[in-house]
Length: 226
Image 1 (tube, rainbow, N blue to C red):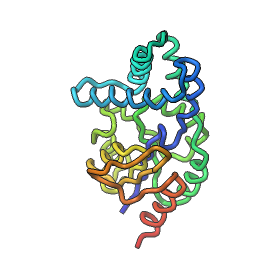
Image 2 (spheres, one colour):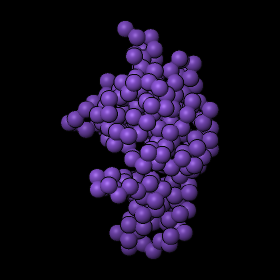
Image 3 (cartoon, helix red, strand yellow):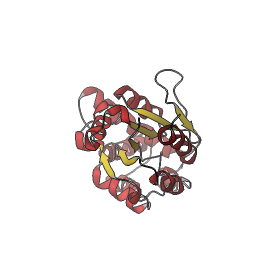
Image 4 (cartoon, rainbow, N blue to C red):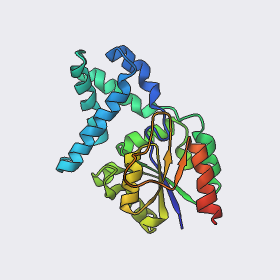
C-alpha cells in the first residue's frame, strides 16, 4: 500500500533550463549549465561518501567556481552567488501543475523531498506556484544527509508516521530512484529528455515521459489498485 508520494524538486518538477541565459552571459555557453549541475552533484556525493557534509547551495556555488576555472573564465564569488540565487525562482515544467492538481484529489499525501536547503526549497515551490499542492516540504539538509543516502527517505516516512514501504519517490534522476528503492521505498521515474535509468541496479515499477504520465500510473497502481 502506498500512502505518501514524495517528489524530488530540481529538474523533476522545476525547469533548470531557465538558467541557460545566465550561463550564456557568465560562462559563454548555455550548455555548461548541465556540466555545472553534474559537478555540484559530484561535490555533494563525495561529501556524503567521506563524511564531509556539504549542503546543496554551498555545492552549487563551489561547482560554478570550479567550472569557470576549468573553462578559463573569470567569475567572482558574487557572480556565482547570483546564479545560485536564481535557483529560487525556477519555473515548473509545463505539465507539472495539472499533474499535481489531479493527484491532489486522491487520498495520497504529497510531500516535496529535496536536497535544496529549507528556505530555498520553500521559495522554489512558492515562486513556481506549486507550494499549495504539498502537505509538507522536507529538506535533506534537515538530517544533514543528502539523497540518495537513506536518511532523507526515512525522515519522510517518520514525519508522516508510515512505514517506509508506504512511500513512493518520484524523480527524474536515476540515482534518486535507486536510493529510494534501496531505502525501502517504491519509486517512479520521470524520463525527461536526456534522463535515462542505469542499465544496472534497482529499477522503479513506474516510468513515464513526464509527470502527467507518471501520475496516470500512480493513480492506477497506488489508488485504484489491482
